[in-house]
Image (cartoon, rainbow, N blue to C red; front, side, top):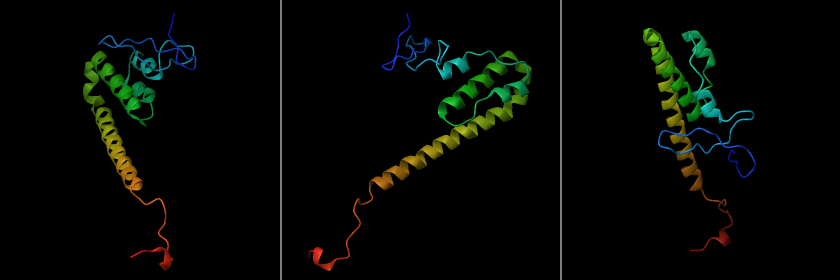
Length: 129
């Protein structure tokens, strides 16, 4: 019997190497979450097919999925490793850009949290000396 979330969704059935179970909700009609569904697919036969299957690089999980797919492809087709180098470099750039934008977002939140909540009044009687 599969476990469910508080909202009744099934939990991903993937068990990590350390013995811990994934805690993400499983996709509909699947035993696995979005991440593990993509990670468990076998790599295609051609690099062009692989690049068509890569997810949009919009968050850390999608970059990790893409990286795992490329590594699996290289392991299955070692003679294609040289051709896969630009894809790996692109994933490295995406990961670096994501880290940089996260740092900028965090800095912006720290800055806006320090801004005064009320605008100063121009009424001279309300100011004390």
